[in-house]
Image (cartoon, rainbow, N blue to C red; front, side, top):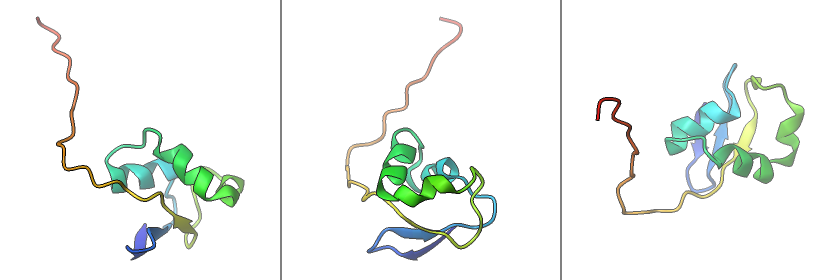
Length: 78
């Protein structure tokens, strides 16, 4: 994946990228992001799960949240 224009929030896929991998790399999570990416790029669903190289993918604008991310953990021995 190669980012071509940060202002436009567009990336170019590399061979073997998946939408969820791109979302995870850029946002730190693919939760809800895959759906947002597909909604923003209606023709993207025509490609196989592993995208070919060279597809321009428009990304949802990331909201700047100054709050730290909350990571839920589970303790097995409590």
